[in-house]
Length: 308
Ligand code: TMP
Image 1 (tube, helix red, strand yellow):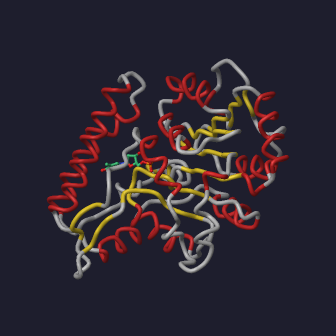
Image 2 (spheres, helix red, strand yellow):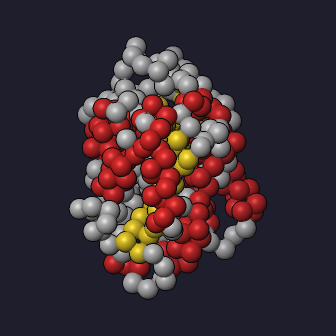
Image 3 (cartoon, protein in one colour):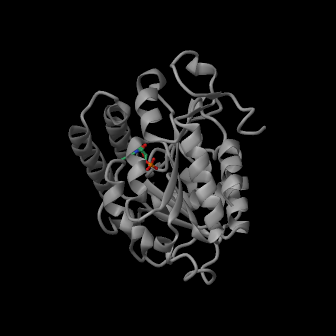
């Protein structure tokens, strides 16, 4: 199915339920695509959010879990405390009416409390493995094919998430059963003691609205690329030289993920997962292409194949 034949919407706001993609400005998109293609794959990098972007919003009719949400600490009291925080803060996260500054404070509060509960209530790496095995989480159709395509073209993928790096990497191990030498995860990373118990988190917390402040972290050398600990470490450390960016996110705040790169061209793709009617206007302004209704990654693969 080509991008031309796909149900694409160029204006208005009717019938959103049946649409798959909204393109802000086709001419500008084609111009950027041509510029990226002519610079070649060595100048391209992909920066992707994880939860709700690489993963489905709905899995088998249920809300898909996030890397945070799937975690069962093995301590019912603390699981319930984190769930109560989720019930309170998650609607605020997606509210289109809360001003950015206020929402940022709320998100800081949420992450701080949740991380605190994970340390206080006890968490082991075994509990992470079990939680992932039991989780309602699935990659969007086409994600593996997208990664394979980008690996073949030697294009690095930075997964930039406000979730939990240790869990995202476990999701890759368990759900994909394979590794990709071009992928690096930048996310909140746990520190375990010798008995594999969580004792703290590394560095400054990344939440959904401060990714721009962490964007430079991505330029750090790759130590934790999935799968191939010996290979390609230096190949992907110089992401700053890759001045063309394909950015994938599900929040307007995700656009800040590319702030550490002085990019020449950026194509931004947004997955609009909730509050479609209220948010389509701002998403259409913010992203070059907006995917609706829990779309697959096939459209992004087609876009990527036009870029390299
Ligand atoms: P991201 O992977 O899209 O950057 O964001 C992480 C998601 O994690 C975000 O949508 C909110 C969610 N979350 C939970 O489900 N439970 C939590 O305790 C916290 C702090 C975040």
